[in-house]
Length: 170
Image 1 (cartoon, rainbow, N blue to C red):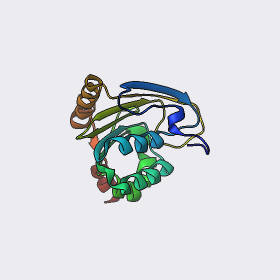
Image 2 (cartoon, rainbow, N blue to C red):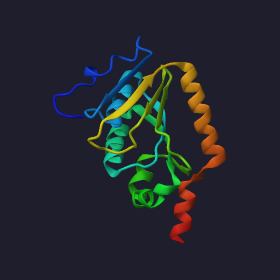
Image 3 (cartoon, rainbow, N blue to C red):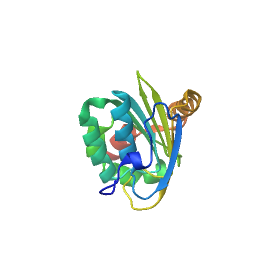
């Protein structure tokens, strides 16, 4: 997030605001993850993206250290495999489950005992200065649909990154 900018300049608290959106170059997707966790507490996270950067991973490391993250499931694209493998040592310390599939979606699902939140964004799991858009919703039907589709993608159309990494190392 740019200095002097507050998330509250773009988004209102999740309760009672069920669906919100933004288009800006001042917010980063990691800001939204951290903001969401601060409101709903300890959560499981599912993230889909074409790729991930070291900058985002570093931010996620510190977010995880807050104690609000139980488990992270990450789904990236096969085309970003080489970049992802270069981050493997760090990635495997932050993210418990990483998968590769034909994937270009950018969805973050955050589920706690309090609430479920779906974030659909144009931003990869990277840090950039481009204008990015997102919809943030607590609509249970949207969360359920996206969760079922991500779980199907993981179960039936992906490869666990640990299997690819171990095959490459041998």
